[in-house]
Structure formats: structure tokens, C-alpha cells
Amino acid sequence: MRLSILNIWRNEMAEETVLRRIQNSWFQIDRSVSLFLMSLFLAACQTVQTSDGNQEKGFFPSFFQHIKPIFHHYDSQSSYVVKGKRYQVMTTNKGYHETGQASWYGGKFNARKTASGQRYNMYALTAAHKTLPLHSKVRVTNLANGKSVVVSINDRGPFYSNRIIDLSYGAANRLGMLPTGTAKVELISLGSN
Image (cartoon, rainbow, N blue to C red; front, top):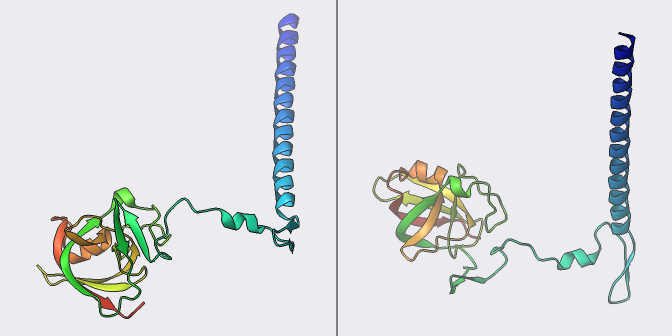
């Protein structure tokens, strides 16, 4: 009996030692990560000599400005190319009026970045257009049932020759075109960008 109590006590002591070693190693890793992050922070705050001889201070020196974004922003571009075809972005939406086929896109693209840099919200009243300036407001009317909705252009597309606008799920729902997937619509710009 005395021997088994001694063995249990030894096993508990061994487990406690192992736990202490694990805690110490995590503390060392945690401290190492903290030191690494602190050194990065201090390096970012340093004064940098620019190519024109001036000194630049700040958290993000100018060399960060040369990094290109991974996603495409068509907002600041006057034209862009998709599938070998060049699209010329309109400088204003003033007087814009067009009739043609509309389609919609939904859940598959939800929360992805749009051409404007916003995250796509399938329930918002937004749309994709090939050439209208981003952030343009457009009244879309379903010619089959007379329903209309005002959308904001925040993306580029649709890149199919027979379609003039790609609506969000929310806008397509308001127009009553979810079951058919496409509808003949009229687009009229509101205001001017």
C-alpha cells in the first residue's frame, strides 16, 4: 500500500514537471513572438533616406506606396481589358439610357471584393456594368412587369455580349426576375458622376 502511494506521488510530480516545462516553453515562444513584433514595429518607425535625399519619418515609409494591390480597381482607370476586349469607362453617366438584357448574381460571389473595392453584398441594391462610372445611380425597370429599382454601380460586368447589366440578388428580387434569371430592362441614369 505504501509503495503504491509513493508511485502515485512520483507520477503526479512527473506530470507537474512536464506541465511546468510546457508552460515555460510557451512563455518563451510568446516572448519571442512579442520581441519579433516589437522589432518590426520599431523598424517601421525609423527614419528613411529617400531617393531625392530627403529624410522621411513615419509608421509606413514611402516604399510601401509602391506595392500594387492584388485585386483590380477599375475605378481609377479610363479603360480596362477583359478576355481580350477593351472597355472604355464613361467619364459621366449624364444622359445615359439603354435597353437590353439583365442578369443577376448571388451567393457564389457574396463577400468578394468588387471593382470598387467594396465587398459584394448580395442583398444590397447594387449592380455591375461594363462602362458606367463606379458609384453611378441607375434606375432599372423590368419591362415585363413594370417593377423598378435604383441601384448603385459598384462592379464591372457582365462580360457576355447579350447582357447590359448584372444585378445583385436583392435588386433582382425587387424586379421579380429571380425565377427566370434574366429579364429585358431599361436603364436610366440618375444624376451625373
